[in-house]
Length: 338
Image (cartoon, rainbow, N blue to C red; front, side, top):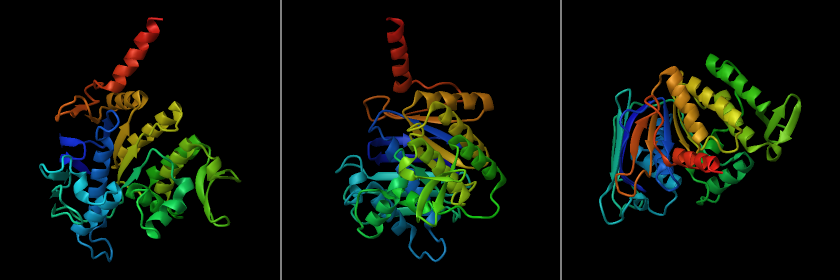
């Protein structure tokens, strides 16, 4: 589990120190305020640790990190990630609850390598993943082809890694809580994502009827992806899952079910980072924090126009002040004035 993280001069982020993170962490703020940069920064680091010294991989952590940053942020030189070219270096650091730390730094002039990396984390056998707001099931072949054949920018590493992770469900025993959650997910979507050997592609199956992915709703595909990653054992109890806009394409009652399931998985050991623009998501997580008495840190980006424009709060202590809630209140007042 990631216990804390700090970033300096990282894209639009001037300075961020998260303090103590939780099993569920919420990211809110306007567009281009740094939420996605933060998700990708954490993801690049945790995947570097997971891939380093795994199996027969002989690459150094520095080499793995460079590739992950290069293909995740898709910039010709990684120095472009630095917030203000010609000024201070970019720095990143996170600490695991198990005691390990991972940090790196590079300057705006960095091109094809990360100059300084420090890693005291123990090898991780788990896998972490980003679930993007956009659906990818209908684009799997294109995503893999663009990377492995054309070696071109377009779909960044978060999409490519997810495309590679979507392998058919494994037969055999699954973690008991995962089996129960998969049953809930199947009930919520009234079906399940399966790989058709006859058609050589993914289909959505309801009973004995198979539907092409193109005929399946966006929200159903999003839920089905999580179900598949649990079923094929890609995700485990120690995985870190990053979700960008979980509300996209989902009916409110499906959002409630998804967040309830996330809470169960978090209580079993998973860690989640959720970026949202939805008042509905914020309110539901607030109710979860209050009813279960759990800490859900809120990182609010873009709260001011200055450099120190990030605020850290906690849903356990109450609803945070933010532009999403402010807009909901404004609309309510506008309605009352009619």
